[in-house]
Image 1 (cartoon, rainbow, N blue to C red):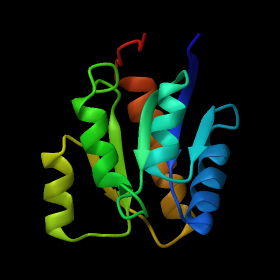
Image 2 (tube, helix red, strand yellow):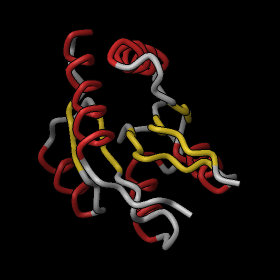
Image 3 (cartoon, rainbow, N blue to C red):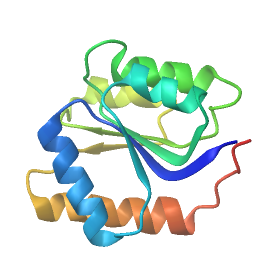
Image 4 (cartoon, one colour):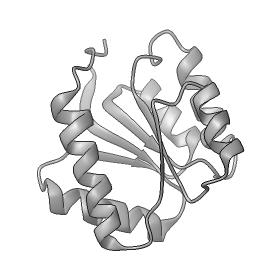
Length: 138
């Protein structure tokens, strides 16, 4: 049985995770968010029945990192239709271009304020979870 969640957040940095979670809960206290501390944990969660509407991932993490996660997601028949959004501290053009080459659906740079995180959280909720029509994951 699949467990449908709103967002699978893949983030290794505890401080960034707290900022993102606080902002998400402020814009929608009922939003169901699952957290994975790295790409490998995210894939294990996905393979064990979690079915998020979207995946928000950091790019630079230990292990396979966000790049490896994108590569795996977008080449897996079961997972490739889940939108994958990169949220990274890097604004380097090569990181942005590489993420889109690996079929990221969006690339955003982490803000430097809680108001910036709230703006991103609102965008995720309003655009990706309310406006965009997403396929059911079976």
